[in-house]
Length: 272
Image (tube, rainbow, N blue to C red; front, side, top):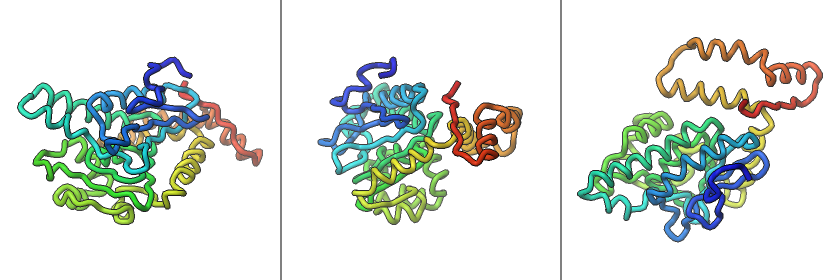
């Protein structure tokens, strides 16, 4: 086990991590509450991401809600209610959610959401902040601040708009209606829909495909996509040098050698 906070690996905890070969897992483990996240759980998400991001063996991160009924129904309503009239608690809650979701979006390694069941409110926000979203056919999606009379944060709104476009984002936010997985796929909220029985195998097939390829390429291309989402529209010194230097880096050299020798490349880069 890597040298990280041992509590993150406790399978009885409300949120914990595991590692199977090159795949790191984040489990939301509060099925009796439909995997609603407390403030403490939100605060642990960046720790989970950091532990897996810093593990040289891990190439892909998958986040999954346990129990079979929900990916997550978002922030625990009791935490939200406890902040009424208390600006300090409100700000603690806001930052915990923001930092948890941004940790997913800004992870160096690809993050896949495996969605089965309800994906509501902040749970949908979690999925939106992942790189790729797979869902079972019975999953349901909604973003519901208008039901509570509160306002969706700008950071979350931007991620949603980047994913589905402004009109679809307005549809989801203004109505607070639940949509099924097929409609979520149609509007671009998720990327793949499969049966519940095929969900884990489909996610693992995709994750293992990523693991076969160059982690150097994937992590740097993810960083470039994030730079575009952050507003960059053309190459700068960093991206220009990255393109050129990649040809002479270990993975680039191995990729060209493997192509010439008509064999599968053996990529070694692990973040160094």
